[in-house]
Length: 131
Image (cartoon, rainbow, N blue to C red):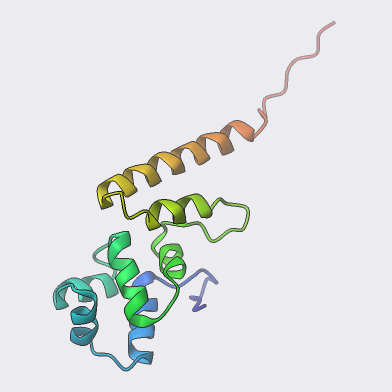
């Protein structure tokens, strides 16, 4: 995995560019394979646009990389083993859902996880001792 100077995962765009160049594909060739416009793909690589899960799946297929890896880099799926990823992947893989429905479900699921994490932290306020 490409890491930047701070040790964090590189951006999705950087990773896509790296994979595209490694596959010896031009921006136009990859855009044609994925079914998106050349300017749109360029904007994704430059970090100006966030692609849908469907476009990420097409990119993964065209570049022969893991779709899960692209979801992690796009911030859709958490890379931490302690975080639930299978639910997110199941939502993204469900062909009966529209992109909007997938995004809504992912947002609701993420809010539930955040709420549970917040509630799991014990209160830091000390209670006064009773006589």
